[in-house]
Amino acid sequence: MTKSALFTVPKNEPCPQCGAGLVIRSGKHGPFLGCSHYPECDYVRPLKSQADGHVVKVLEGQLCPLCQQNLVLRQGRFGMFIGCSHYPTCAHTEVIDKPDETAIGCPQCQPGKLVQRRSRFGKTFWSCDSYPTCQFVINSKPVAGECPACHYPLLIEKKTAQGLKQFCASKQCGKPVTAE
Image (cartoon, rainbow, N blue to C red):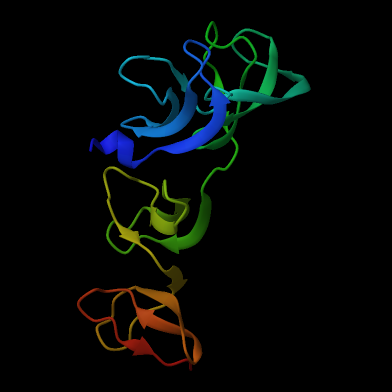
């Protein structure tokens, strides 16, 4: 039995080429619709009806700084963004969700500040705003303060069974810090 046969789900829709049923299959680029009589019939079609970057709303009154056409709100594979209505002729885009900057300095490189970011899986993390020069990253919420045990200049906040607690952000120390 082939791998694609293991990942098929009937769609109850006839194939436009041969009339056999269509099934949802999984490929290296994601799920797609294909004929159940493959390889005799090679009909395939994307499962998603809308392409990447489809227009959600036209933003009236807001013009593209490059070509002076209307800007539009688009839904892309990484979330919502603003782009020019004349894409691909004009490739101007703007980010909607800019990272939230904290007032906490980076403990690894002193001039940088920690900013809140989201991974491609939706997890929140904090990293230095001078990336890629500084690659400091933590997964827990940073708190301004100093560890009394090792004097590391950053604390993190974690949820425990007893509630929110502060810990040293240093991986070598990691001791809980008592509130004064």
